[in-house]
Length: 387
Image: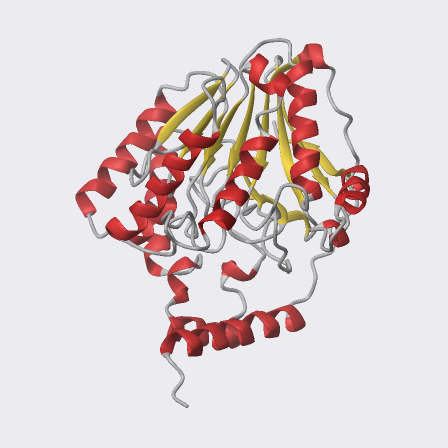
């Protein structure tokens, strides 16, 4: 029997993932001191960061239910309307985004997207003007380039319009096939700058890429005193598998072509170099936030021009290991998400909420009891002041 290249690539990637999980030393964070949730009267904005949630299903994912509870709670507690936002940081529908309606797997894709919309669209969130942003990831593009990939994003856009009624506020950011950057101001407290990094990885248009970097600088320059946060699917640094630190097996990834999605790919390095030069000139963002690796990580970055913090919140529906990496202060591979609390004083606080690994998903014919236990098992596992 002749094995096709896709099957060979899949087998190699599986071997790599298995080998990495066996050989990667686990990261052990140093002791830290928790900070408490701020008083609602002190809050200017609440930002939820949820990455790689595309394999979750409403009714089987404790995380989706817990997220809805949290979004409802903080939407109600926020002193002002439109001061809570949810950012889904890419890979929002696994495995290949939203397929065409005639595809027999379209109902599966639709159900996964519906769960994310439901989590951010409770009655209090709708009443208080909470907005959810779907940031594209490589899987949302269908792991494709050009028009074929944009078609998957447009399928998602059409489905969002169908699933969200006139009172809902869920949108794709940036628009399908557009790189951004897009400036999203949450109230008047913080500016989130969103870039579609998969667009950059698959584009061969140097003129458009230069325009993107110019726009990044302009968005930072016009932010005034507001802290700026850079949001995209791919992080700038990671202690997980996409960091390319597992050199014993990296040549296998290169042979399969999967290297373009890893941080040490040449095309990604060009993006980072360009962004960091722009940040040096226009001002360093307080943090970059992303997913891509399926874990929760907090890193302090010191490279010239780099954001002060790198936050990876990619544990929405899958988990991968985390090993030691420069600047890594805390990490966990548990299902969870992050909250950024921007205070009226200008301070910015980070909270990481997670549950034990057993509650990543609830199988079986009667998942409801498991989901209820999983929702109750979520707790704040890390917190600190970023600014």
